[in-house]
Length: 160
Image 1: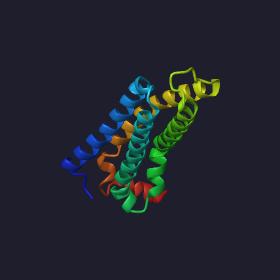
Image 2 (image 1 turned 180 degrees about the horizontal axis):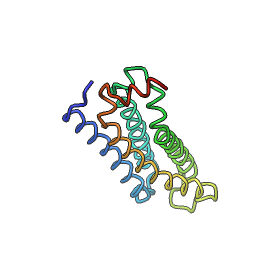
Image 3 (image 1 turned 120 degrees about the horizontal axis):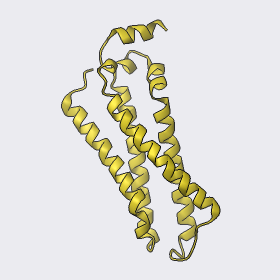
Image 4 (image 1 turned 120 degrees about the vertical axis):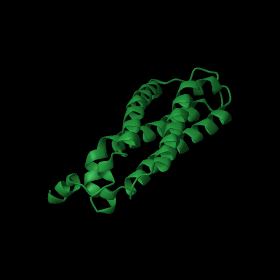
């Protein structure tokens, strides 16, 4: 199955929209800290965008010739780091959202930062930079024509 330019453009723009949404929420969510319900809605939107972005990556994998030829292991070996980083980042984000909302729900303006929450916050934000890099790299790398055509590269992978 060939990757058409229109389909590629729409998938890539959707992926970039999810990345930008996540970046903006990570950047500006603390400005909404005075209303816990609004913050809950924003965090749910962020988590849904992260899950949808992972689904879009897997749908992109499923549409490749390599996947349809049964070489799932090749795709996994090629993209195992981005998959691991994405799943780790989703888990860290959900964990931070649950913990921070649980601590600040009834008194959002008091000092509620515990040592563990600060560590989780720093780790989650640090992992977000890796997530942005690997997700964008994967979105561009999956469009490589070697994944969509029967080529000598795939024949070599069959031989392994």
